Image 1: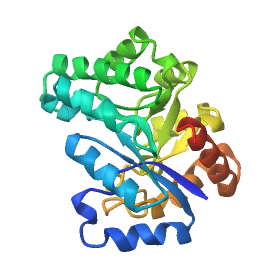
Image 2: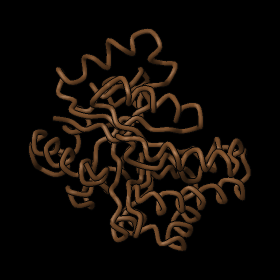
Image 3: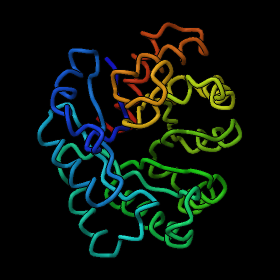
Length: 254
């Protein structure tokens, strides 16, 4: 059975058919999903989804692009809800320099504070890093994130950066981008990384794999990602699914 380690099923894209889609997942080979908080509101949405669906777990946290909304009282709220049953991680947190706002200093401040929250709550982290390779790694090293553990979501850097994170004990989240024709760098990373350090993710509704690129993504597309990994690793898609499911449970300490 497939474990989707990173989804956003509270997104507006699922408004029309969310219930029907989620109720179809298990009969289509999806064992579990972690819905990821990206703001205070989406963290609240995630807590609701966890209550409603037994196979949905949650991560609570604020995406770097949303960190301008944070203050110490909201950080305390995150700490409180992190104790909710089925909350398995702090995330998604990190740095995103693709957009100019909020400023880099604001992002860095709340990245560090949420890393410390993870340390305090003894939960792994879900790391978002876009166009911020060096700063992300520098902060994670300075904060001794190897003691926290977690996953680099939607891994998008090269083999050198993968090596650094693997040395720190992190998992690499691999999704639909692997199936794109221009994903040479990511294919090299998947070839390099030990199979038991790779986990499957959708980041749905975004980043649907080929042949559905550009359409709304869902966990139902993960077999395409498993097949792409299988071709690179020269093993069967069934082995990929089995190993990544086991690794996802270790990552989220289930």
